[in-house]
Amino acid sequence: MTTTMDRRALLTRAALGATGLVAASAMGSLAPEAAFAADQPFAVAGQPDPNFAEGLITGRNKDLLQVQGSDGRLHKIQLTGVTSIWKLRPTTIDEARIGDGLYARGVKLPDGVLAAESVWLNIVNLDVMVNSIGRSSLNLDHHGQKVVGHVQPGITAAVYNGTPAVSDLTLLKVGRHVQVIGAWRPGTNEIDIATIYAAG
Image (cartoon, rainbow, N blue to C red; front, top):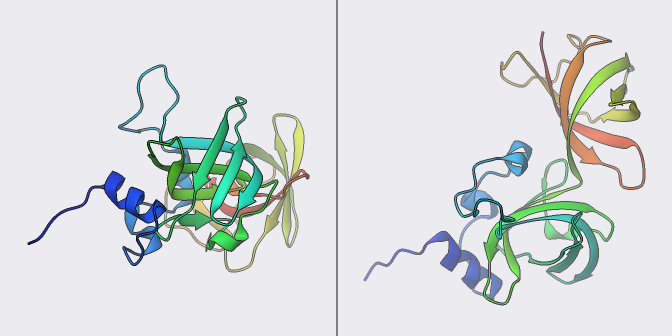
């Protein structure tokens, strides 16, 4: 007999210890852009999305994260064998640290715990102006705040006018506005750059 399992049931089973289900990224996109996706089918208008959490990690007990949201709410995030984790690149549960910023999407369980489908650690999405370009970093301005963007060999890429991402950053221009997705270095004004979106 063949049965189908919906997303909620799959994550619930994973959170409760059923293992060997699917590869970590099979449940949804791990691309950092997905952290900022606007279309969430389960959200009620005017209410926080119950299947989303954000904030700073304040505690960890193995695969259970305690998170203080920017709105003051406390979240419990259960990482499972099917949770996709991004911290500048796809990574493992071991990279989650107290003090890291977090965005998480998943399924809210009856006990209020969010069984995470995808977690993005320290992710930032900044509209910045390029002040200067060095060999391994960019000096950026984000609404008057200085930000140092570190270029990561083999990771950092640029997308010019919607073309496929390339590692060539030579078309970036000082004084131009770009969008940067990267990973914040907690406690600093520095980020590691994943992708830069620019007009050519």
